[in-house]
Image 1: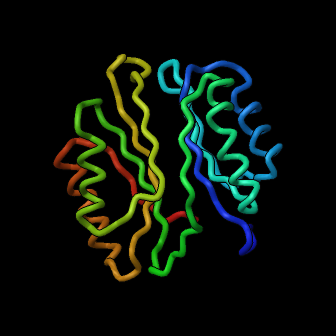
Image 2: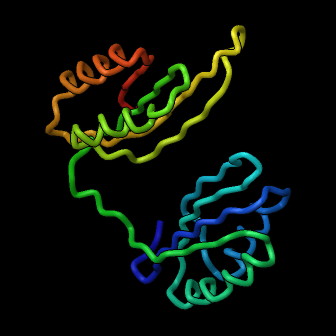
Length: 179
């Protein structure tokens, strides 16, 4: 939880993967008086990628921002930062979890993201992974996402349209409320 005098900064980092990057990056953040509120990290190919939301007093964030170029050079990372503010969710929405699995083919993310966009639904979190089926070696693709369904939207109609899309595209999908 942040107090009103604290500000927020989003840091994006990408670079060749190696041991110790998360430790070194988080140490630099803490050493500058900032606190990590939220983060997402992954390895894509041989590249390390992370998004971090930090909070601190304005002067601590300014100090951290000044050190980012040299920190990036020291760690072999491309660092980008942007000041942000806490999101205020004024729209009543219900969080839902969506899972999709299909034979890997170009355009799956576009189709699913486009479907939810057309319904006026915001995607809050999205993860994808390509892999091979255990026994057949068939290339498969999986999407896991959290969406925020506006309260005024008919959930039964949304489910019906979603499952219809899945049937048309030969995709396995589930949509369920987050508990």
